[in-house]
Length: 221
Ligand SMILES: Nc1ncnc2c1ncn2[C@@H]1O[C@H](COP(=O)(O)OP(=O)(O)O)[C@@H](O)[C@H]1O
Ligand SMILES: [Mg+2]
Image (cartoon, rainbow, N blue to C red; front, side):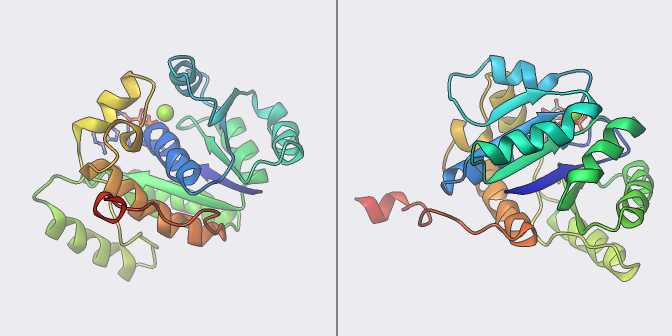
């Protein structure tokens, strides 16, 4: 089982959204997936209550219980455990860092966001864990701007994933319904973004797909 922690020293940058969406991309590849919700606001536990699907298994947890839940996840044969964290809370972040194999840091591309990301990157570096930054909420006509920012940040040694998540209504709408982008619009833009980011994240985590890639509609017909 691989453990991926989502971390950001800032609220509202997409940690929880990315957590559930990456979970679905992993499930689609045949993985058995759990989520540890370390945010005291319990937004993912509430999201899970709105769902009917069994997976991902979501546990609301206090920092001291994390290691035990990770072991329990291993025990029931999970392939992947994602950990969603609150911004700023050191106990939660420490608990997540202690068990994570790899770290994903979502960020917006406003100057404020990019300043905050430097701090998160420092935390990940100090923890001596592999990490990468995912640019989130990229405007639909802003890919060039995102590319520019990625190059700048790469120059200062910050690993930014090549694929980005665009600013799309499906992310909010689907989570309000207890779903994810892939579940709501399997062939939509949000789903395409999530699968592209998951491909890079799963590679970073060393997790290989269990099932063959989905057949696209024309292949099935
Ligand atoms: N790529 C996106 N496109 C549109 N809305 C998004 C996107 N990512 C996140 N959001 C919305 O932004 C808000 C904050 O996201 P959230 O995942 O809760 O951030 P965090 O967990 O970092 O605080 C939520 O309302 C969410 O639906
Ligand atoms: Mg959150």
